[in-house]
Length: 102
Image (cartoon, rainbow, N blue to C red):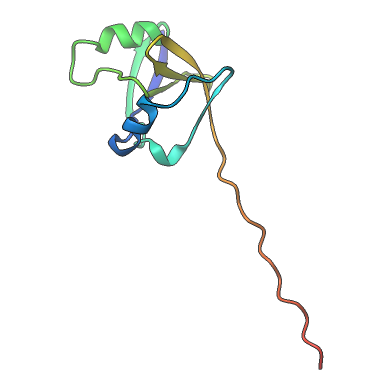
């Protein structure tokens, strides 16, 4: 069995996720929209983890992300699990001040 780490979608982001259009390819998820991922569990795959937790207070909900032992992410959607990846924040280049003329 493999260890899975569960990242919970924050409640303020859950509503916008619910109404977001379905995308093809890997879902782009923002780390800031998820809680820290301290919950871990052993399971054969994402669906086994979902099934083991489905009737508990720790149930995997739509929008939550499971990280596998190899670092691969799977996001829970209404139709099952799909591949996901963290979106790196875009850093704006620091503009250097123009040299002053003396």
